[in-house]
Structures are given as C-alpha cells and as structure tokens.
Image 1 (tube, rainbow, N blue to C red):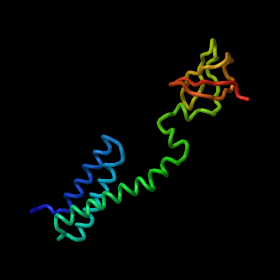
Image 2 (image 1 turned 90 degrees about the horizontal axis):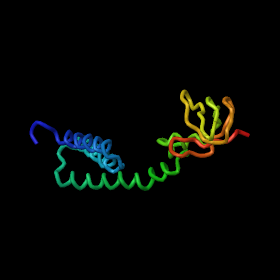
Image 3 (image 1 turned 180 degrees about the horizontal axis):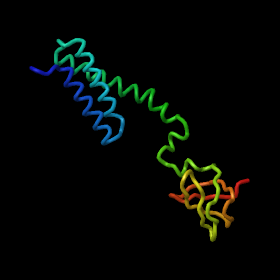
Image 4 (image 1 turned 90 degrees about the vertical axis):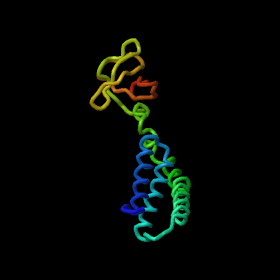
Length: 148
C-alpha cells in the first residue's frame, strides 16, 4: 500500500478493536486488538513480510492472546479480592459494616450515615445516633440490626 506502511494499518485496527471493546465489553475484542498491535510491532521490525504470513501470524497471536486470557488471567480475576467482585454493587459492599443512624428508625424505616451521604435503612425501631450493623441489602435499602 503506497504511502502508508502496513504496520500502521495493524495499529489502526488494534485501536478500532480496543475502542469496540469499550463499546461492547466482553474481553475478546481487547485481546484481538492486542494481537493486532503485536502484528504492527512485528511488521515494523520486518516490513517485507507477505500478506499470507501476516494473516497466519495474526491468527496465531489472536489464539495465543485469547488462550492466555482464558487460561491464566480470567481465573485470577474470578478468584480475586471479594471487593473486586462487588465493585459495582456498593450496597453489598456495606454488609457487615457498622453505621450510625442519622435519623431514628421509626416503623421499621430510618437513615444511616454512609460516607458523606445517608442511606435508607430498615430494622427494629432505634433512636438517632445508634450504631447499627448492615446484615443485608435489598435494592438500595439496607437491612440493619443494633450493633453488638
């Protein structure tokens, strides 16, 4: 292709695939994009490589990067810290935490201080200022009991 070195095309493909991963997360486009970026590096070092050799090597890189993800990285991510699996479920991260009521629990409903805000809580009637422990979460409602 005159005017544009082939390694740039592989790098552009890598950027497009990685951008596609951001739009539709699932990890596969990321690893295929990494394989495409690796092809750009190989072609930068060996600019005379034929198209068939590029296609075969890209297939090998793609298989290797996806296999590495499934074999080594994915199990480590699944075994990771408990907080990592609750990353986007803040309420569930609060289970076991001790909070202070900012509004009394009356007729089973009140509010407790969480960080710089207040969350709706459900539990036995308790006065404001009481320390409570979060026992479960139902949507954005924290189920609490008096802290022991």
